[in-house]
Length: 100
Image 1 (cartoon, rainbow, N blue to C red):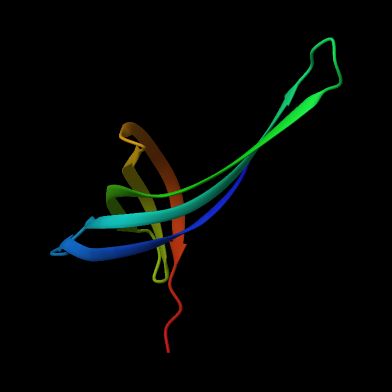
Image 2: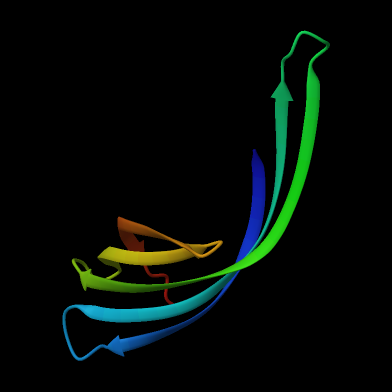
């Protein structure tokens, strides 16, 4: 299965009074997936192609703690609603800020 999509999000600092900085976001994900199914039978192999498109919502919460002047460690939680089914994700990362 091949898929692609894009995300539009509203993100806001929920609490930034001190370590950590907490953010929240609500997002819409537009996606397009192409599926190819091969069916082997006694006759020649049959190929079935399916194209699906849709929109799904997800939300997330995140926290960042500054470890250096430009570097922060992050942890984020996201919950996707893929065709009505909930899918949870947790990520850890680093954030580098570039100033002007």
